[in-house]
Amino acid sequence: MLFFAHRNILAGEIPAEIGNLFKLEKLSFSVIKLTGQLPASIQNLSSHLEADLNRNNFGGKIPESPDQLRSLFYLKIGGNQFSGMFLPVYNLSSLEMIYLHDNRFNGNLPLDIGAKLPNLRKIVIALNNFTGPLPDSFFNASNLERLELSYNQFRVKVAINFNSLKHLSCVNFGKNNLGWG
Image (cartoon, rainbow, N blue to C red; front, side, top):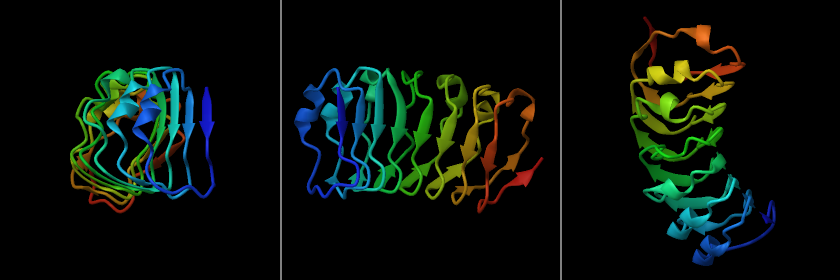
């Protein structure tokens, strides 16, 4: 089942009943000005899921334990007002693409993010308030193609071994306070 609402004029919040769409494969609510928080029932969407909620007015925190979303492979929630810590990535090993840019996320990234997301190809988390060290495990994610971490508050020395990043075609660390070491 597919659900698209790209560039329409819809108002309000995503109804909690969306969690009853167990066979939903693609959820696209991008650029339509929805508001509110994501309903906790969104965790019930357990099929091979692509979720695009980009450029709305969503806010608040992402539901705490998306453990049931084990088949989530594409998550695009950039251009909203989400806040809090980085997603709990455990049990999301199918995730290939994460777009969290232009939100209000903060805190440190999980140090083992690269190991917990072995299929990760693209991560775009620019324009947030992330701090702390860049996880070394990023640089062991052999499928990584795109790594955009600009406009955050990382303040560390970076020692990168690019040897294992054979597919990497885009890296952006701009507007952080990084040193090379």
